[in-house]
Amino acid sequence: MNPKRRQVISQGLQSMGSLGALYLLLTESELVQANSGAKLLGVRIWPSEDYTRITLESDKSLPISHQLLTGPDRLVVDIDGLELNPTLKDLVAKVKPNDPYVAQIRVGQFQPTVVRLVFDLKEAVKPQLFTLEPIAEYQYRLIFDLYPTNPPDPLMQLVKESARKEKLLAEEQAKNPKGMATEEDPIAAFAKKDATPSKKSGPSTAQQSPQSTPSATTANTQRIPFKRLITVALDPGHGGEDPGAIGVRGSHEKNIVLSIAKRLKNKIDQEDSMRPFLTRDGDYFVPLHRRVFKARQVEADLFISIHADAFIQPHAKGASVFALSQQGATSSAARWMANKENASDLIGGINIKTKDKQVAHLLLDMSTTAQINDSLQVGNSVLRNIGNFAPLHKNQVEQAGFAVLKAPDIPSILIETAFISNPQEEKKLNDENYQERIAEAILAGIKDYFAKNPPVARRG
Image 1: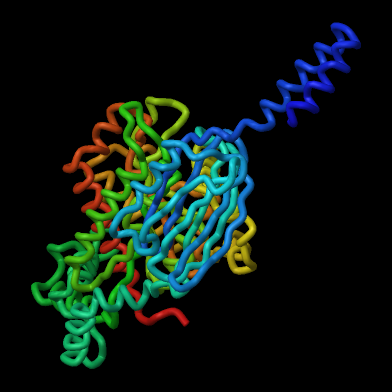
Image 2: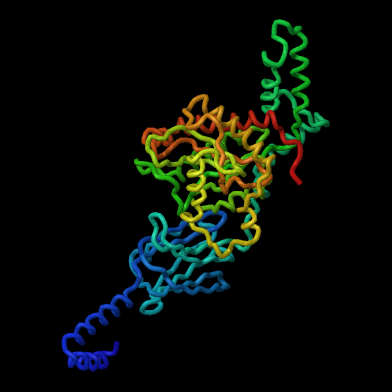
């Protein structure tokens, strides 16, 4: 306020006595509060091949304006109600050399209450700028999501990575024109094991002739089709802004499940008949519908979401496997777990305004009875193999309305590898040996399932 004007107002109010003085005091206090800038609580950058996210967390919502410039490519953002401070300057140092889209960030005080951010870009981007309301431990978050104009094709990348396996498969099919599996194939090996007649359904071993068992086994083995590589989508839960559950020792679920998923990916890479795909391979957030969409992009034959969740009771323990349900949850705990996992989008932060018809459709219950039945089969196979070495929370696959399991044409399961809220299990989850064993058990369950349900052709 102009000093002379303030003096005139002050003199007039003082002539009104103590009431006027009190009004003047309150008015000045409101002016100071209104003119005080927002407090910046933190800045974070989450680079990935999919997109780069920049987060500014503050105690107030920050009005912004932005413009894209070319020659060279730049994104200019003006933030109102903010003053340049060390926390904001720290954003400059957080840019990593391997960031796919941001070369550097420049910050400056553009106007007395306006800070300008200039993002020097490595290529053209489609930015999404939006604000998230306070939730969980977060205050207001100003989000800059920088998506590439020409996004990478995950299927083409997967094909390149598995070219050697595809070549070997083509050579094998040339030797077996009918597409029958050989006994050396690992899936056929599992089928051979499962083809052994049981004591309940067939004649006893003592009653069989020496020739009968080999011929029956060979016939069953040769009927297992082996026409293409099996694609397994591995989905490490949470990531980036969404840490997932946090153990008493400070372990973040997002880090543990990414480590387990990478171990499982390495093991699948060693299988001649399979190829893995990670929905995220680093510490960044992927919305639930994008996880499903990415699995469908690579034409996955199986979707496995990996978690290490918490429960309201710290003594809860054991691994669990979940499938989707069309008719409600099979238990109150399963319902609670699904609601908690489905809230991941709110914590991780999605731009609600960008939800198109395809996204809205995916989030509906599109599942089919066949998909759920297949999911239960693979879920039981995985659960059985995990139970061979680790305690189980429940001895059967549970069902609930998990949004991430709603691919209508891909068998999908969610695995809780253990409870991070249990101090003993948190310690176990951080143990490399346990991570290896849980990955081995999941792989064994996958192979067991496909031995009985080999994919014979690509979906249309």
